[in-house]
Amino acid sequence: MNNRRVVITGLGVVSSVGIGRDAFWKNIIAGKSGISNVTTFDTSKYDNHKGGEVKDFNPLNFITRKNIKEMGRASQFVVAASKMALEDARLSISKIKKGKIGVVIGTTMADIQSLEQIDRHWTSNGEEDVWATNIVKYPGNSLSDHVGYYLKIDGPNYVLTTACAAGNYSIGYSYDLIRTGKITAMLAGGADPFSRITFTGFSRLFAMSNDVCRPFDRNRKGMMIGEGAGVLLIEELEHALSRMAPIYAEILGYGLSCDAYHMTTPTVTGVTSAIRRALRNAKVSNDEVDYICAHGTGTPTNDKIECSAIREVFAGNVTKIPISSIKSMLGHTMGAASAIEAIATALTIKHNIIPPTINHDENDPDCFAINCVPNFMIKKNVKVALNNSLAFGGNNACVVLKKYE
Image 1 (tube, rainbow, N blue to C red):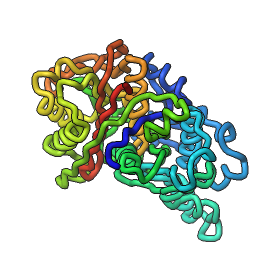
Image 2 (image 1 turned 30 degrees about the vertical axis):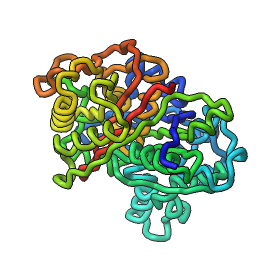
Image 3 (image 1 turned 90 degrees about the vertical axis):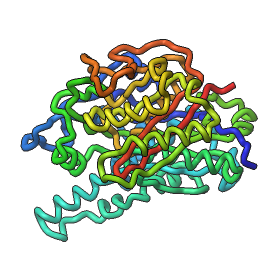
């Protein structure tokens, strides 16, 4: 029962560079930036004023007005992305046996905007001014609950909270459920909204850039906060073939590790461990990898550690592998990041186009030998790709995708 093949058949994305597969892909391969002045709240008292907000999202395009009132922004994002993924896969839930399709969503802050609104009302006007609807919106499990309820999915339903690696964790968990025959298909992904607490936290950590995000560049200053959702419809191969579904890529395996070293800083050992486990589980050698979608936050320490880990694993092959970061365009979307990056990786494999790392002006000695695909996309036949994600607490997750054959 453990030899079932697992494929990606549907993609749904809400991001600052585009909503929907086509708009998202068109803009990231063009190197378009989704970074703009923050409008969610007043940033006049901060040193930073920019972020990757989703500006043109209308939930009514995906969700009924009645249901919108019950959802926070992250839930709206992930329901919309899930609906797009199902439509992209041309899958009707009614065609799958009861209980054989599930939902697993990763997140860092869930619907934290609801809690922030509760706090504002409480501190301004007292307990009686707190809206009950905001209390109902806040619990973290609401992300997957809303997807299951709104789309009538009655199988396994989970939320994973491994921060910035949560999207990849969701993909890996779905892969296991399908490969072992427990489930036929899963909606797997991640979602996070733009929030004051996240913006404040990274500002106080002095981890944010005040102009642009420039991963792997010698003059990089830090990350940018973003928001959005990415959801993939992951399916057992035979089921996908039986209904003539589109196939973007095959999932070969994944690897996890936990540094257990520091709350915010990963270690080279921890990252190399996750990459090596992913390659071993996927039965892929390091000279077979054609592209790496990097975690690439743009912080001096994080980029240095990720580059060191990649050099250690891939050794002499590292100069042959394009390694780009789409966070340079979207900002860091927290729990949605690796899910959105998995979508970009699947599309890279499908179209043989590698998106760029924008804002790159000068190579960094700490990132030597790394081809970060500076500023312009490149065309290359991509058969095997790796999607890296590193998270607070040392939670690292890497997923291996392959062109379906």
